[in-house]
Amino acid sequence: MNDICRKCGNYNPIRESCQLEHPMETVISTCSGYTRYLNLLSPTKLSTKVVLTVVTRRGIERAIPAYPELDLTSKANSSGEVDRVYTFQGQRELIHEYGVKFASDIVSAKGIHLHILQKELNETGNLDKIRIYLEEKQKKQKSKGLYWMSESPIEVWT
Image (cartoon, rainbow, N blue to C red):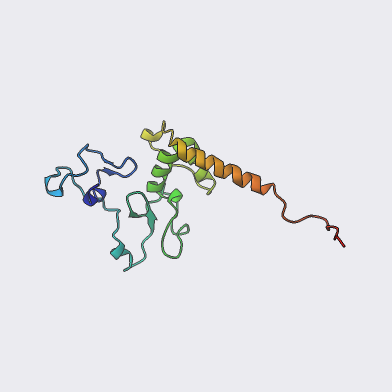
């Protein structure tokens, strides 16, 4: 894949393809639809000032809240990195990976709601990702049932 294509606004990082259906090997000088994707940040710019960022399939991007009422500054760590569930870009990826139903479960566990676009309403997700998510969820529920300490004293063997 052409590294320049990743910086284009027409690049779809979820599908890893050009939305204009250009081949990914197109040279920038011959591409008729190249537009710079402004939310993608270069690693060198990150060292000069603290910017709220999110790691996506495209790379390191400027974090955009999933919906206007969401305050990302309270969700960021000391480096300015935000978990993808809180961002517009991250929620797009979650819906693609897990489908609307499971993405909604993941996001609601963080105490926010899932912002679904019209074109994503029927998204079913990746079956392998969903299977892994359900297995991990089941493991967590089973581990809650284990008791590591007793409520009453244990008789000592002598």
